[in-house]
Structures are given as structure tokens and as C-alpha cells.
Image (cartoon, rainbow, N blue to C red):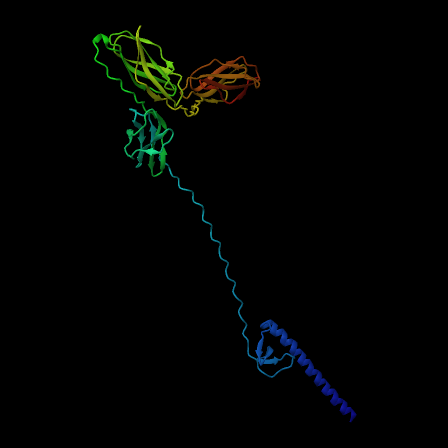
Length: 415
């Protein structure tokens, strides 16, 4: 009986061990399959997280404590991995475009000396050219160095003269020509003028007889005015008398300088050149005369302004083109023990050229042939050589630009 009892206990113990082994096997086997297929897909049901495994089409569910719950869980489909977005391709940077080349067309603006200057008016002159562009021109002017006034605008080109008025007597004014086109505003050089002084009219005298008439002296405008000299002009009528005349002048109305005296016996225009003047300076002058052994006579006082100092722009050095002859030393011809024929190609390129050969023993070039002037293929003979000796030679030439040489070659005389 006891044996049967022990056998029964052993049988149930084996069954229990078998069941435990199966449960342990199923637990780890389910975990391995799940991690490989769905990487632990989690399903929530009735508040519990269930792990699923599949074997032979039968689903076995194990709850959180590892025992089969006998309930069928919902199949969870694996979610697809998000696709990587393609990286945006970098856009090429725009290449910088060069600035457009704009050619500025400047008009020709040459301010000239004033014309017909009086006590209250003057004529401004200039040479202007628009160079094919629509252009507005005008003169700017003002008292002293000011340029605060302007004439009406005009569009004509060439030599232009415009009048201005309302000036003050014996006053310095500045002026220049100006222009405007689509490229901008441009100005000519600034010049100056001095208006005349007011001369008080002489009191009327009673008519005189022919032998009582006084000489007449008239001061005219100066001419050929430059920065350092000018010509003073006037008219003298001695009225049948012997009259010495001269010009008085200076930078003030005191007129401390005088020209040389000259004798005049009949009515005529007179002139005198004065030098040593300063640029852009006002000078005053008048014609004066004296009757020999008698009275003095004077013309009215006038004025002028010397030109501005002219600084010539530096001129570039002249481009001198050197004309070199063609000098091509060729191999020697007909070498013997004591002589040889030297050959070369020579072209003078249109210049008068003297040509010769230089030669010598070893590397020396201390001897030369007679000079010649022909061009083309040249052959010249040399003699007095030593047998079995090396000599050097080259062709050379000289023209007005200098001396030139061909390449150096060598020869060896025969034994």
C-alpha cells in the first residue's frame, strides 16, 4: 500500500514539475517571439497591459503576473516608421552683377574775357559746345568773388555773348559760364572784369580861335591783356602844337608809373606796352601830355583786370618707338684651316643701319669686319685663323636708336 502511495505522490510531483516547466517555457518563449515580431506591442484592455505571443495559430495571453488569463487580446498592428524627409537642396547664391558703365558727356565750357565794359554794363562771352546732348547754358556773375546772379538760360552752341547791366562804376565782378545736361551740372573757369569809372564832363568853354584850340587826349580801353602785361591805348590830337605824350598807370588811382615820352605833331592813335603786372589785379591808367614849354593835358582814367595765372597741365613724355634691326647670326660656311665665311640674315626695318661681324679666338669678340649697309642674307669672309682652333662670332648693327647684337655662335678651323 505504501508503495502505491509513494508512486501516486511521485506521479503528481512529476506532473507538477512538468506543468511548471511548461509555464516557464511559455513565459520566456512568448517574450522572445513578441520582442522579435512586434517589439513588445502593448495593448490596453480592462485596465491591464497584456503581452501577446502566437504559436500554431493559438493566442495565449499572459497577464502582468505571468499566468494565462484565458482572454483573447486584440491584435495590435505595428506602426510604420516615419519616413525621413529629404534635405532641402541649397540654392545657388546669385552672382554679383557688375555695375553698368556710364559715360558722362561733359559739354565744352570756355569762359572768355568780357567785352564792351562800361560803367554800368558788360558783355560776357564764352565758347560752348553741347556734344550732341540737350543742354541748358547760362552765365553766373556777381560782385567781387560772388557768383550769386545768373543770366537767362539758352541752348545755342558756339561763340556766345550775353549782356548784363545794373553794374556799379569802378567795381570788380566775377563771372563764368555754366551748363546742365542729363549727366549733371558743369562750370567753366571764373574770370573777372572791372567797370569803368565815371568821368566828370568838362565845363563848356567859350569857342576859341584856331590859335587858341587846346590839344585833345582820349584814353581808350586796354587791349591784349594777359596775366603779366597789357597794351594801353589812346588818341592824341595836338592841334598843330608839338606835344609830348605818355601813359600813367598803377594798381591805384594815384597812377605812380609812367611809360616813356614820345613826341606827336599830328592827330594819331597811340599805344604803349606795360609789363611786370600781377595776375587777377585791377590796374588804372590814362593818357597824359605836355605842350613843350606849356601846359599839361590828361585823358580820362580807365581800368582793366589782368588774366588769371595759367598753369599748363603736365604733358606726358613723348612715346619713342625704338626700331631694332633683325640680326640673325647663322652657322659658318666654308671653314678651312686659316679662313671661314660668316653668314647672317639682316633686315634694317627701314632705318639707315651700319652692320658688321664681330669675332675672336675662344670666347673673345675683339675683332670685327668692315661695316656694310646691305640687308638680306649676308656672307663675309675672315682670314688669318689658326688651325684646329675655336672661334666665336656674331652679327652686330647700329642705327639712330642704338647698337644691337645677334646671338653668338662658334666655329672650329680644320687641322
